[in-house]
Amino acid sequence: MNANSNLTASIEMYLEYKKLAQEAQEIADSYANELKTVLVENGQNRMSVGNYTIIFSDCTRTEINRKRLELEQSDVYKEYLKSTSYKRFQVS
Image (tube, rainbow, N blue to C red; front, side, top):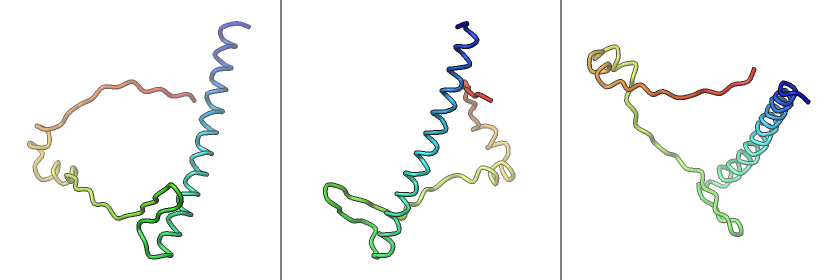
């Protein structure tokens, strides 16, 4: 088997496992939605079941409105911009 064939096989395995991971995530999400529904239907945000505790609660996150800051205070926006370099991997 030549190097190109090995790479092709590795790419195919990679894509297959990515697909399986996506399918597994969809199943996990389905179970999470089922558990959330039980909590909502019972008017609870926390429930103990055996050794487990499930929690479905409201959370708040405060963020800077970047678009508005850029529009109204572009000099401040530009002063605080930070660039990050990274490597991206993709197979197509």
